[in-house]
Image (cartoon, rainbow, N blue to C red):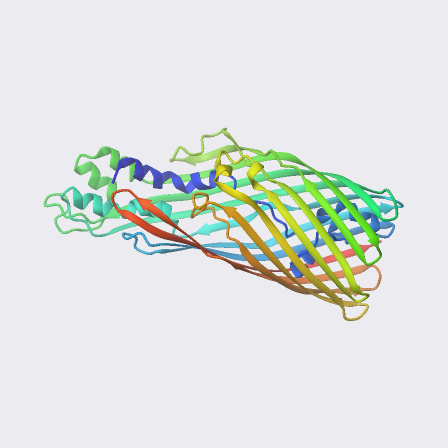
Length: 446
């Protein structure tokens, strides 16, 4: 095993997350979780999905407050021959995922404000680290054995936690140019925060050496390497800690159009420009050299083109269609965007039925497809194509108050790549994921 490979495991805990991933969040309302198709919305969540459609609200002041609770599990299975355990599980828990919308509508003009986590969200906690951390440590017994010191075991205290949240503050001005056509322009201020915490420490091994360790006890790796005259390896296997934070701000421009050619039919289009986001390191501790304090890196939010259609099949039954194209290849992610083969997209359908004047039920389906190369996918940052299903309903308490309830479940497609380990061989690594969540929302019309 070469020395630079040991260096790799001691820095990969941060390197793979230092670049941006595909970060946009489309789940921005309680209605979204129960329908999964909201691009043609003319409800309060149109502040995000269809600002031009806000001109169809009644005159007055309207506010909405939503919250989502999301549970996710990310699993990496690596078949590297020397690992103690092949499975690594990361827990993501988001108990509070709020959105707030406010709209003032008067005649043809609607002014609106929105707040929510437009990208990122939550934190991934890997209690036993990741295979990219451990595979090089797992190779130490083979390395020492090749040096003439029979070694069969290793252990290490490995931990990693990464979080990312991009809060968005959005304002829109919407105007009805005619009875059936309206347009809107919006600006979203993004405040981004990424944090990285982790350590690799207490690496222990059991080489048999007649003088240093004749009984083959588990001893600190730096002690062994120092005793056999390998100071470089001793330094590389010493304790490594990372505690770093990145912050940055940016603006996103948003254009929106809405057309209602028929009473039963509504059509929308929205374009969000690429958000040129730079984040700056604020580093408390970094034994890897990956987060020099004060260094700036790029973490763009890709441009989005979205269209939506809603059609009333009958007065009580509505169907909707949404399509989102995320222009990942046009973003700047410190070169990682070159590993994107094609832009990702969402395709969604939903049905909503009014059981009574006060109660509606709904269901939706969402297909998400990523076009990422195997080189893009990493154990600490991967994206999986998926099928999602949402259900829920709305309760109308008079003309002023609406309550939305929704839940969703996502079925992901596993992704497997083969990783070559020099002088050892090539082994498969599989990425898996599960996600579920529920939401509640209140809408009030003054």
